[in-house]
Structure formats: C-alpha cells, structure tokens
Image 1: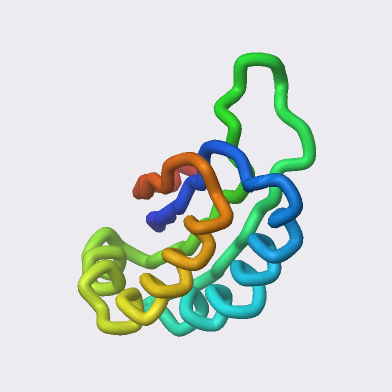
Image 2 (image 1 turned 45 degrees about the vertical axis):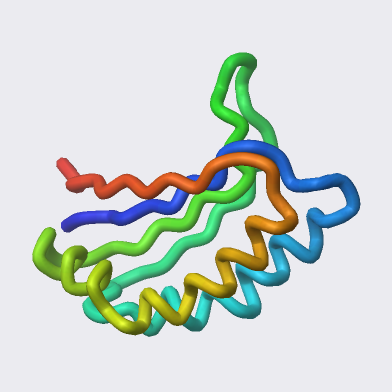
Length: 106
C-alpha cells in the first residue's frame, strides 16, 4: 500500500485559522475522496509538536493500493479540481505545500 501526503508547513495568517481548516474539510475533502483508486483519506491538524519539529499545520493522507494507482490519481482531472481550492487556502497561509509518497512497510 502507498500513501500520498500533502504537508502544509508554515503558519496560518492570524485570524484565518478556522477559515483555512473549514476550506480543507468542506471543499477539499470531497475532491480527495473522489480521487481515482483512493482507499482512505485522512486530514490531520497539529495539536502540539516537540521542540524543533517542522511547523506542520495540516497533513492530508490518501491511501492507494499501488504506486500505479498513485500515479493515476496524480494525473487525474479530479486532482485538477482541487487546485483552485488549494490556491484559496494558500492565500490564508504563509509557508510551503509539499507532497510525499510513502510505501507502507507493515
């Protein structure tokens, strides 16, 4: 199994926190669930972190059955539907958005 993660590292602009998370839940979750071959979708909001940890404010994870399934999802028109929504979120956010694909070992 493979998991593709979106990591929002930085800080949400003051006063925009609830709007940022609401966009993720209300507008992006349906897109993420509609991704081809998606088996499970998780959205995680940081509550606390140890000193020196990256400033991750939101982590999204989607599980796929294979690397080929991840690649199909990445090339899908469904993914493109999320781009304007992510752009709205980035207007409320100072930082970077990175994507990582993991292979589950156990």
